[in-house]
Image 1 (cartoon, rainbow, N blue to C red):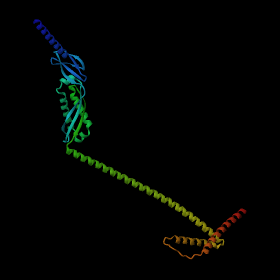
Image 2 (image 1 turned 135 degrees about the vertical axis):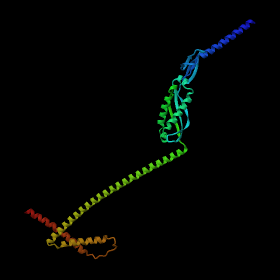
Image 3 (image 1 turned 30 degrees about the vertical axis):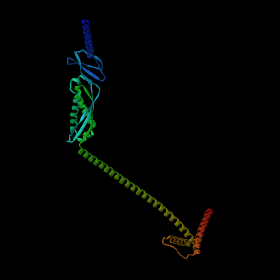
Image 4 (image 1 turned 90 degrees about the vertical axis):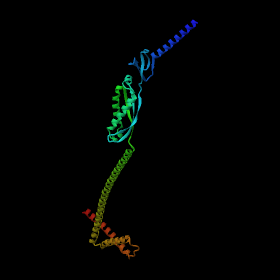
Length: 321
């Protein structure tokens, strides 16, 4: 009986020792996952930071203080109403990206890091937008993001945090302001359209005037050229008539009275041509002595022959001399 009790006590003791050893090993050996860092506290005081991998602690004396995520984290900043410099109300919401670079500072310099970053971001959004007009805030997103990033990163630096980006997701003015802005935009576009149309009409009028001017210049040059050619034709005609008159005069001086019939036949045929070309003439009955006209033409032919013969004789006489 005593042996059985002694064996049971020894078994219980061994079991207790085994459990205690397992607990000690569990408390002593820690496996830190990638992307995290753990702080170690000895009797409640921070001593060191455990990096990813396998680490050993002194049981009972050391314990894990805080488990800090070292990866870049997205922080949604809730929407809030902001009053701009010109007293316009806009609803603004944003998003921030941050990364813990010092686990000890993130664990012991601030309580509730995400809440602190969110409130800090909201405060600076109100400050930045409150110093700008509505039109300026709506058209300068990049400048607002740059200012917020600079201010928030500098303010959160003692917390062991690096703010990488701050982006304004939306700026929503009230419906009445949106409607007024839409009317203003429409008026501006109508104004630009009217200006462009006026410029087009101006250019069209200028080009039309230049075209008319060029046409008038070319027309004047054409009239000038036509007048020059007309004058030259009249001059040639006058020379021909003068030559004919000289020829007839020489024939009359030589005693050939048929030369007079040249001018009579010429005027006669011109009168018949004008009568026939008249637009009001239908049928014309004119007594015409064909023999007289033929005789006149024959007289002209005789005159021409006589002149030609006289010219050839004078040439021969000049040659003999």
